[in-house]
Amino acid sequence: MVLKAVLLAVFCSFLSLITHLAVSCFKKIRSTEEQLIFELTRQAKLISAIWISAFLIYVLLFFMTPEIITTAVNKLNDSWLIIGFGYGIIIYLFLSFMYLTIYYLVDRSVSATLLEIIDNAALKKLTIDEVKRIYDVDKKYQSELKGMLDGGFIITEADYYKNSLKGRLYALAAKFIKGILKLGPGG
Amino acid sequence: MTKGILIGFFCFSLFLLHIFVFHIFNIKRRFFAMVKVFSAGVIVYCILYALISEAQAETAVSFFMRISVFAFLSGAALHFMFCYFYLYFVQIIDRTPTTRIMIEIEESAQKRLTSGQLKQLYSIDKKIYDELQDMVALGRLNREGPFYSITAKGRMHMSIFRFVRDYLKLRRS
Image (cartoon, rainbow over all chains, first blue to last red; front, top):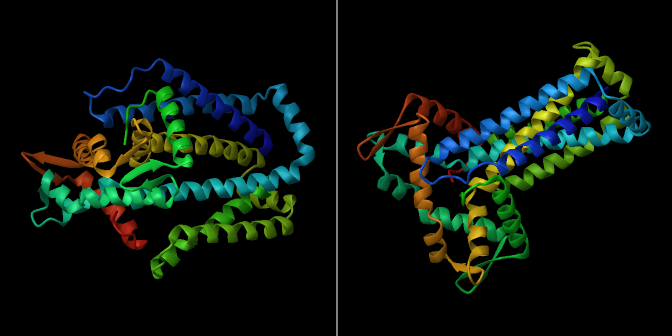
């Protein structure tokens, strides 16, 4: 029964992904006039709404399982030991990865750092120039570039920074996905 | 599969114990430490998987709920994990400076840029301004003339992050 639920979840998530990609084809390219946070909020709400709608399909299919799913489950049941072992590792990996994303969000959050900078000020308020001076934009730039050098995404040639093969493939993939999802330059 | 899920959850809870290690000790290479803890968890998983039977796992679950309910919730959890990962993936592609920097280098005429040229194409100065404006829009900051000050909502957001950063002894980046 767990195997059936897993197969249905994979199917419904795949359906959600395809739906979002299809909806993105009809989206307008991101406007530079509107504040970005509103568009990001709409994007997150759209993705969540698609996934919640697909969840309703999951519920329906769980209680009214089509023959094709039952057949697939019966075929895979012969290897339930290996599938069960692998799936448990996947769950462990997924949970750890979710924790890591939260860890790095807390660690790297620019907004949380800016709030602390303002809170640490004597009068608890600062102008943007004062914030930038304390935040040290140059140091942030250098640490981003250093991180990319350490990760092997870029290499240096005299004063220049160049993408490594890894960085190039990543940049091309990111550009392609941004094109499909109609995301702006970002960053 | 019930056995695998339960043991997976158990190993993840063991993995989380590293939070207390980070709190007590000054660990420098944290990512590598986490990878080692995760790897140790995989070994624990293999041992427990060999020792515990599927029937024992199902008996343990049936103390709390029916197996059909457990199955339903397992599938639901997986579905929403995929949603979380997709949201995170879009956020990485869209919002991280590293992605933007690599794209700018790739799109440049000679496919290479100096630090100065990068700063002209992608301004972190502007990112800070945008972050502050976003926080005003979200109600976390007030803007009075040229000054930004924190609202009650912003203070709550900041307190949570500050508590976790201090507990894990994270340097501000």
